[in-house]
Image 1 (tube, rainbow, N blue to C red):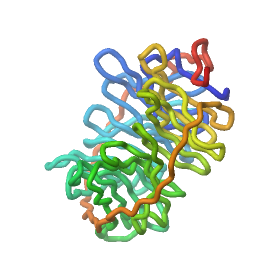
Image 2: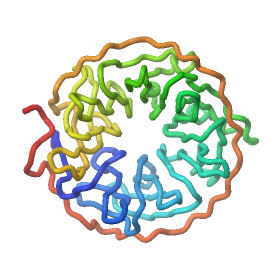
Image 3: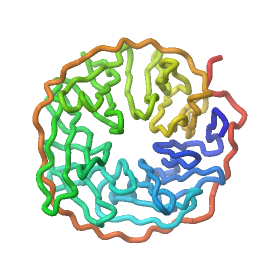
Length: 354
């Protein structure tokens, strides 16, 4: 794949997850947006409006993508090349991510949004009412426990949280963990082998937030600080990605062993990682949105300077009691053949320094 791949043939597109040459997201259309799957062969678009795909994982059959269709959950099976195998919608809520065995997101309960977990292997689902409205944005399964991170309503707006759900036990016990207790807004958006990332506000300025697994157990965080809005979206291996405000413009952000760099603006964001590839979107000069894929080992951006500061969060005890949830899935119509063709690295301004 070329070092820069912008989907100018798909104006209005945004990519929220990707693995290799398969990526998923949404395409803006008149009256709403449609779920989008992008491969080297072309793009598949869900026929129904008000849908999007936010998570992607490898499975024995190929890939599983998850998101929403209207007010319903959406899951889509793909073959190893990203071609549609099946699509189903059911329940109510949104799925933000999956590892192929589990999926997580939000369920619209009687009192508002709750965390949601699907056990795809056992075909069961759990809702986790929280102390306030919230979502599970990220997840990681380890030794019988599904760890979740996300956000829940708190005194300052939202608190980031960590919960451990013992999914392997016969009877479903409580999920225990921590919430940040920070007096301003903070979210945890991603959880992986190295830890969790998100954002945290300090006197109204959003800073990149990072907690490794030791930090998650003790509330010891690190902030990537500089003037302007910063948000970390994913952390895999030696790379972090997200977005950074530079001179009043949001730019795609990546941090590698070579340091922090930005490119792709205006209104750009890198939302997912499969090193060395990063996936997101850019509005560039057309202001309509274009799905964006960057090879971070080859892409050259403009450097950014951050101060790395330690922060001890209040890290308050937090728990949620899961309740079984019955879901009924129905097939969703989808054209298995690509409906739009793509051009890799089309003519036009490239997200790199002038």
